[in-house]
Length: 436
Image (cartoon, rainbow, N blue to C red; front, side):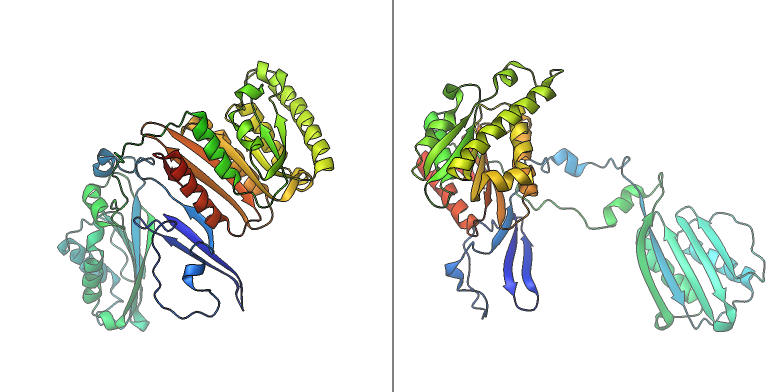
């Protein structure tokens, strides 16, 4: 669970935002506790349990495939990218002679061998040299010296045996005749090397160890409600339209080819806060064509023009549209047309009321309905003013799910109203589970 808390108009800093996440606490439903902290800007907590919510997200470890035991316990890292670690160490106040560079490197190579590393045979550096690289099976070490300043710089780059890095650094510092009081060092993650023999062990000791702390328990609760019934569909539609503010609203319902196919039309028409409903059937040419037809683009353009003309004619005489509902009977091509219309700034400002909601009903929780999710999200991104909120209600029986995508504009108390919608749907359907 994650939530973003938003408080506008804070003195000095203008807007204050706090983001919280938890694997156990559902911020939308968890009982709140007053810790009796004094406040100057906030009202008492009982007055606004959801007032400051701006974003909320719930994810399922099961649905995301994060509960697969085989995946979690797999020791096959052959396709993973390799990382290395570079430690930069600055050693001052050395007491061993640094000018005899050949002897110094020979001494450091022996220290590496004593520490369990495997130096690779290298060309002996000149005695008057000041820098060299010691190659190893586990990585390499760059050594640079400034004898007059009694200073040695070590770049210890390992791509295996990472657990020996600090031990190795301390041994090299001691070999240089210095100690921790004259040492400064830091580490960065760098590129590694494929094919290292110790990777299986290294993988278990580097980085944060990933543990599954999210819930992987399935829900065995038996729910007796019927998701397929018209009564359930009507309840969901009516409660979603309860997000409308005010009366005498104008609504538009995008449907399949006929009114008989459009389950939402009756429920919208019965809504007391709605005075008039615009029926938008699927264009006949579009209903007869396949989504992949060669001339589908031309058909969709013509259909969009006809729908826009009808919406503009009604909006000019009746006022802005307060509710736009996409019925499950509307094909994907019609959803794409709706997305094109409401992604336009011109259409948003000319055709919609100041406060409006868009509702997309999806009778099944599967990837083939993804375009309807994308429709809601695309319109949300087209809105250039705040507050604007998008939400999904997942309504479940024992073997089926239904989703409701909701976009609401200019409702500062959206989360409070959304919680009421979820509770009312769950109460009226008696047996179905509703999750935001």
